[in-house]
Length: 177
Length: 162
Image (cartoon, rainbow over all chains, first blue to last red; front, side, top):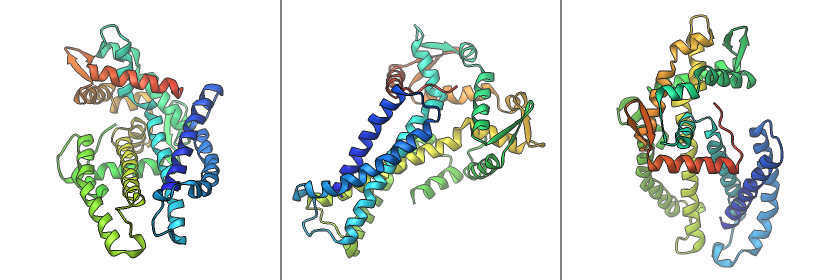
């Protein structure tokens, strides 16, 4: 397990550094694509690191009875899986940029008394701007089509809304949002 | 097993808030993880590990780490469904009689007061804010969360999407 895990952690650390450098030095228009590409490129680093790490690690970190061919493969895949899961967790964290709770809290924080009234929140975060921004996002990602003043679902949006809507109804999470 | 149990709780029980349920249930399933781990170790020769050896312990911790990552992913997925603003907008459009809506129509069925009530209620529930009349004031915990978020966003150059 150890070589795969170590390779995964090293690759993820390099991924984080690459992300920081990338977003500060370049104008990235499609951030998810850039993130996924960086991750994918670093899979090569994982492959390159795995073998040398296996040879370099002290015997105490390797199984006493040695590794079968199957166990070697499982360990390799396990490391890749851990690297993938760390990337997905990072993506989850990254998309808190859409979180209204956090944006409200950051705004409260910048006020001298660290508080805001509902009217002030409504004024600062206008619903028109909020909704227009989300609808623009949905249009740009082909979930929704704009026809004049009206919005209708694209096939992708229809599939998405009906599937997740069914799960939501089944779990009694409605109306939510 | 964890997801099915959580879905059953959502559907048939009124145990809330969701965040608490998700976490408590995860801890509740830790013994199940250990039980399955030891059962596989003892009864499946291909998966046998020696826990008196460092590699065996790494094996056990590796499973736990994957479990934590899966919990993060599931939590994100669940709250995306439960609270996602864009998803709610799409569901409203899907359910509208003509399957198309203007922004004004969306605002009528999905009001800002409802959105604010949910978000501000969540901030208060998490002890990040307290209600003071018509205002919400950040607690020290809320200030720490806000400052930490701002700091991390600065490092990763993350801009708030309104």
